[in-house]
Length: 549
Image (cartoon, rainbow, N blue to C red; front, side):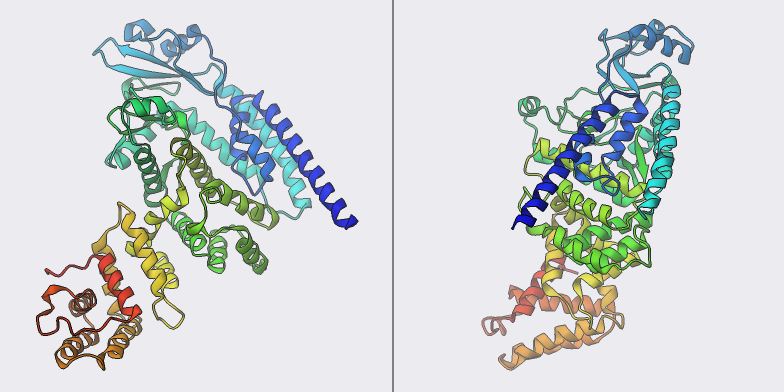
């Protein structure tokens, strides 16, 4: 109709106008100071504040900026360390090897012991420029606060600028960055194939940072990866798994995982660089994010909204039904989507449209995690185009839900795999276990302990009865010897202690898989088990319950 055509044309014009304005905003920011540039980068991960056209343009902001002179750089070193530059360092290259908005890096050799080091030197007057930038940003954010109030949006832009200011001031303190690097090394250097360079604390000040030089190449350097025979998918897996441990286990994580902050070492290790931008999430916040991933994967929108309310994203008095409907329409079937559809950026953009439409207010920790994972996936796809960070992360998430005894995670597990009357959702439990087995961090013993602990509680009685009922259904078609064997299993299920429960699980596994140690008297007489028993047998196998102890 004429009306619908006019509406479509108006919508296209509005989108084109937003795209033009987004380009203008990006161009304006890119010509300003370091704090403004970093603020623009921070806004690029704020889907609750800006529509997707602006987010796309702001993500194009570059860190690389014109370099300052060696004379100024070496004068800063001499002022900070109190000695001549040439007395301590011998340059390997005359010009800096890299430059960013806050500092630039030189390759040199220590005259004292011959060690090759990287010297990061802060830009002259960097702190003064950043202070002025932040003052201007904070003034303008007060104007935007008024605008958002008129739009009935509960968004405090000044608090966002304050959080950003705290982050950037930590980044320009190289002593703090050195401490971050050392803490990161303590927490994650033991992760397989992860390397953290040594910090020379005695040569580090607020404006000068000296670290071990690391030979390597960017993860996006395809020629070097091929030359050294390095496995792209392994590097990406190391990157993703280490990042998940940072965000979801310890909460202390590298918040700026772009290509310039990693090196692939010739021996296959992944080297982390630049520890100026680190973030921390409390345990409740980490668990909330993990649960959100679980509920998105399982398309449980009611529980997802509850998590968002618990984290303070949505006011408690909000009518959440429209949000649940919007989530269901917007998000794909995560585990079954095509690679072209299922990537973190697409999911975040779709969530972002909802965050922008409804009264969401995202706290700094969530923004830091979203930004981290978004940048991480972009890098992972550059290295290995088949990477899907959500699918690659879910085995770790499944492992945590199955093995972590924290109350909120166990409640999430029960909601996932049990019906309202306490019976098992076999397909969900089987799928969860299938995913968990892929994770390097999956602890079979921990999963089994949690399962048996639950089975011997009053709540677990329904599950045991459910299993016993499945056995009884088969009893009529079995011979007397097999029937006696199965009745022993039922008896064991009725004894409410951990040892008997484990023995019962092992007996059932033996029956279902027809293991050779059943005895000659029952071989060949067992009928085909029911589908429920087959599923249960696979679940016991996935739990890896042995038969030796």
